[in-house]
Image 1 (cartoon, rainbow, N blue to C red):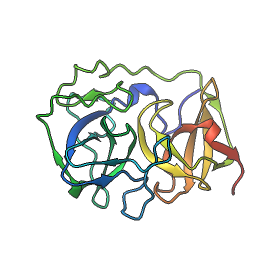
Image 2: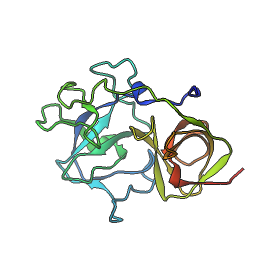
Image 3: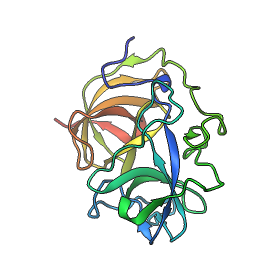
Amino acid sequence: MSLPRGIFGPDQVDVGYEPWQAVRGTTLRVGPSALAPPVLSDAGEPVALAIGQHLGRQTTRNPACLDAPPLRAAVNGFVWGYCLPPAVRKSGWMQLADLTPDTALERLACGPANVDFDRRRPQACGGHCDGRPLRDVRDASGPAVVEAREVYLRYAPGSTAFRYLLRGETVRQLRRSSNRQWTAVEVRTARWAARRTRGWVLSNALRPGGN
C-alpha cells in the first residue's frame, strides 16, 4: 500500500544534529513559546539545561542524504533539538537566545537514541543514510483523540520526532504499521502543530473519537 503525501518511511528522514551550548539555564518545551508547557522527564520533572550543557539542534528532514543538511529554522525564536547527557535525553523546543553553537565540542550529537548522525562528522555515528523503505502498511481511517499527556509526532515509525501533540488534541488516522504499533495521522486540532501537519504517533497514545 502506498503512503499518502506527507507520510514518510525511514528512508526519507536521515536527520542530523549539531551541538549548541546553553549560555544560561533554559527549559525544553512542547511548543515554540515561553508559554508552552515544559517537557517532562519520566520522573515528572521539567527537562532543562544548565549553563554549559548542550542541545543537539536538529537539521531539516534529509531524504537526499546530504552530509550537512541545513539546520531547521527557528520558530518564534525557538529551535527543535534534544538535550545531550548529563541532561535528560528528550526532544523539544528551546529558546535560541539561550544557546550558542559549539562546533568544537568533542562529544558527538548522534541523536536521542544514538541512531542519527552529527552533521560535523556524518560518518562517525553510523546512522547516516541507513533508512529503509517502509513496506506492508495497513489502511486506517476515522478521527482519534490524543490520550497521552504529550506524544511525539514523528517523521516515520519509531523515527525522528519533530513536533508534539497533547492530551485532548484531535487527528485523522491515515495508515497503520503492520505491527499496529504506529499510526500515521493528520492533525485536526492542536496547540503546537499546524492543522493538516502529518506524521506518525504511537497507536496506544490515541483513542477513537472526536469530530
